[in-house]
Amino acid sequence: MQNKTALITGASGGIGYEFAKLLAKDCAVLVLVARSLDRLLEVKKELESISDVSVSVMTIAKDLSKPGVAEEIYRELKNENISVDILINNAGIGNLGKFADTDWQKDAEMISLNIVALTHLTKLFVKGMIERRSGKIVNVASTAAFQPGPLMAVYYASKAYVLSFSEAIANELKGTGVNVTVLCPGPTATGFVKAAAMEESRLFKIRRPAKAVDVARYGYEAMIKGKTVAIHGIISKIVAFSTRLAPRHILPSIYRRIYENVRS
Image (tube, rainbow, N blue to C red; front, side, top):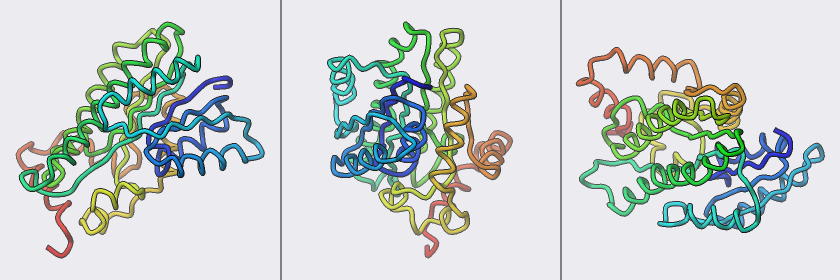
């Protein structure tokens, strides 16, 4: 891991921020991507001030839900002669509500960020990894990837895409020196929950959310081991695999109940 460069999206908080702290101990260069420049500069200062860390931190404040931003990031790094050895596609958003009622712009941004940006960044950086015969990619999905999710239909579908896409390219990349890990956390205490208006859903009332630091550490270790599918937490593993055994037609009703407001 020494002398490697890692790019982390959604690095300003939550799982991405915790990944940055872990990678700062091993990598020579970190490229942190998020929308808020002020927050990125705070993270940069924090990482560079840690006494046992010698890392150069580069910040890129861009909104990956906007068209063409993945290409802009790739070009910016190429112009600086920076090759990415480790790609952490962590940035993602969700939205709670009936599909017929949710704002289309929010749904479109979710598809663009959760699917398009993740896929485009992977496409742009994986070719260099293959040429160097070395590289690691972590795509952050969710246990939502394993079943349909009424009241979060687009989010669940986007994470199902991330899981399927990651497993497929992991197979394609066997023997190239490039490993792909898809990290599937269950409920996790991050800013995502508030942004998706999920605080009052049954999911976050009946289950204690995992800590972002624990999820990131689990994903980091899975990446090092070259594991393809990494599901964090025993309960999450049980939920993910039980959905494969349950009759498909009952799953939407179960998960709609989970995401309904506790007062409904």
